[in-house]
Image 1 (cartoon, rainbow, N blue to C red):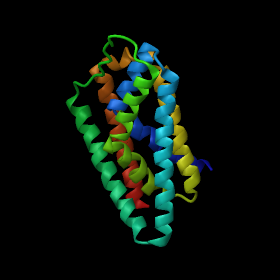
Image 2 (cartoon, rainbow, N blue to C red; image 1 turned 120 degrees about the vertical axis):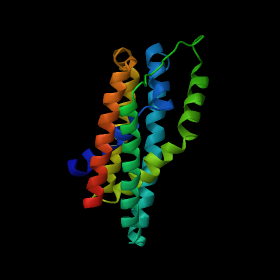
Image 3 (cartoon, helix red, strand yellow; image 1 turned 135 degrees about the vertical axis):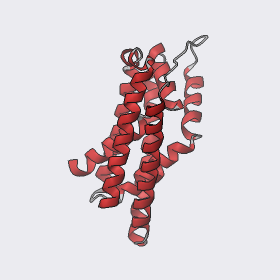
Image 4 (cartoon, one colour; image 1 turned 90 degrees about the vertical axis):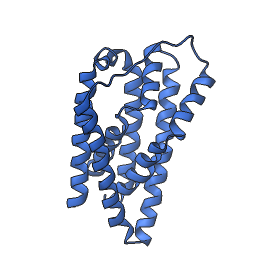
Length: 200
């Protein structure tokens, strides 16, 4: 099980950890200790739905269309190479930092979740990362269900760690150098996974 579960877990976390509007929102809520549980749960469940759709859809299609598997493998590898390059450039340039800011007051739970849902479901990169990328890569594993479960657990655990660990992470990621190191690690991870797909 671990041979399928662990790659799904690690890839999911690697994709989510990149700087983005959703993560910044979760961090801000964590710093303010405002609706943290519901914010993390909403992010995790949203990813779970998208990952499940990707794994189920590509799993079914790959058995009916043999040509789709290599197409998605090399397409996924190309996306990972580009994604890694983007993070490598960000690491080289530096200067990024997370600005948490201070709100004018606590938002209601409804308003908070509506904002989060918009940030999540209106972001095209979410579909690329979950439905397209994770869905296509899952076809390379013996048990796509275990791979998908690993990806879902990775997503949920990351968001809860981010939300509740925000106060510990804030001083560290207020420094641009920390983001450079993180971006460099993400780039290396993406390229290693891409190489594995191409050479498999």
